[in-house]
Length: 423
Image (tube, rainbow, N blue to C red; front, side, top):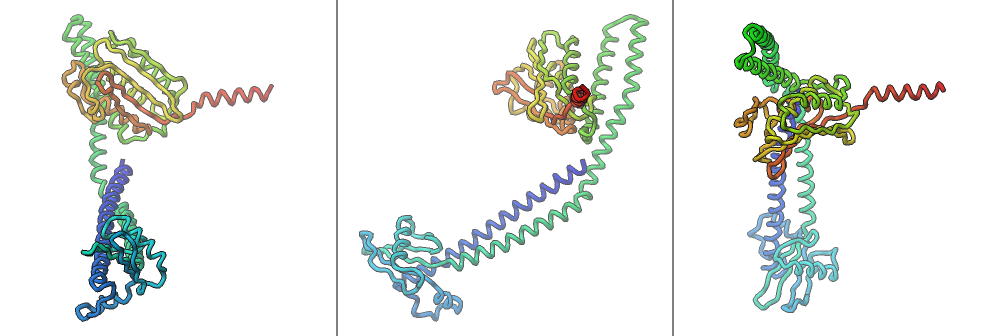
């Protein structure tokens, strides 16, 4: 649990940091890019106002601005009202000939806007009163390259910062999650200890009820005592399994034939009075094996079938299916229902969660069964989910578990191969 909490906490902090830095990085880039474009537009307006030349009176500009004027590479083209390119001034750009310049001007005009980019040239289009247009293309290659280099450097710094913060947080996360781990462990141990301590008085009550029945005979009150003892015993066992499975990794245990476990539980439920009026059908694939705790898996399967029987409509069929898909075993239990909200089924695996149907149902439980199912599935490296039809007519509980090879089949195969070699 501690390792999982540390990873989750670190990933949460890392994701938040990446999002925050990403927003800052994007905001910085957009601001700088807007500034580059704004400076270019001001220069283009100045060139147009000066008739395609640099300002003659430079006294009102700063020294850096004056140097910028002399470093500018730009071209100016006048366009007639019919779209004909009348003249192109290439005095301030040496690497572009007239054909290339006219092609760039046509591309700028074809885009329809007054401002934009053609390759790395920022262009501006101004319409004159006589119907002609003046098009200025200002080279911004150096400014854009400087911006890209600056952004790349900042990106490296941001990346290094994320790595450093992640490493530091990984080192500190153990101390951060320790109080949570200790509290959870104390709670878990308390539930386990209380469950074990409750077994003795429940056993005594059950034995006393049997003795009382032999002494005074069976009665409604004695049957009620036995029934409630059974309920409390089941609740106690479920709490113990839930507490142990929620922090354990059962995949290191032995190999369990899940097909046998499911088939055995189905046979057991068919003999119970609870199944009266509920056809219980099963389709179990043979030889499906998983690594885990057989007792926990048996209680998981039993809880799924018990849940389906409790909350099925009167006379509704129960379908239990175990299938193998590549390296996954899929156990599904389906039952007919009424008025189930498909949006609610995802919350059924919450600990002590009870839907409205459970609160009003005469067979309602304590909201532990399905949370135990999810805990056992997770402890075995699997997942549990609930699916409901759109009209709420049926519900299917699905558990997927990673499979493993059946060691008995491997042994039989080796024995057969050994016998063939002897022959």
